[in-house]
Image (tube, rainbow, N blue to C red; front, side):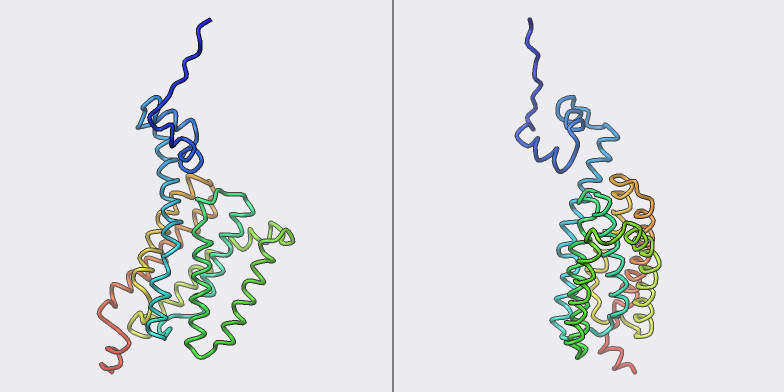
Length: 251
């Protein structure tokens, strides 16, 4: 009886990593055993997984420039705390909804890191506004509510409602920030790097959400988020040469 021939590939040492994080085993076989590098379905999966991992890695630092800018200036001028609260609501809704539906971490992982950074920015706005105690209270209340939302006590219907509410929360949050920028005639301590990274990340998330979850509610949320982030990015470019000091000098 002839022995079965086991096909091998030069990528076999990396197979476990690739299959666990980047592609299913059938796609590994298509790419590295059959050398079918143009397999459309597998290419979509790999691109989606790659973008997802890239977005998550980028999200670890996406708002760090904003945080450092606030700390360096010791001022939160131009940033709206209400806008931060609405953004935090949207991020928390996405995170809770994804965990409840057991979506892969690569499809929502950036929400975890964005949450931590957004909470930090919210505290700094209060701190540099002379309300440190209020900022500490904000941290305590938020993390207390987060623990309840992520616990089995919270019904799935509540989590789904939160996710559905993301769309108006994102729109109103960005409109508040856009209105603040317009009234001030500048973007204050808003970090251009963070704004552009958020815009690019939300655009990429549209594709990864459709590919990895097929959830239309999340996809629509990211489409709206991209549009709203684009408005803020456009304001950053428009007010590029304006600053609080220059504005006061002109007045």
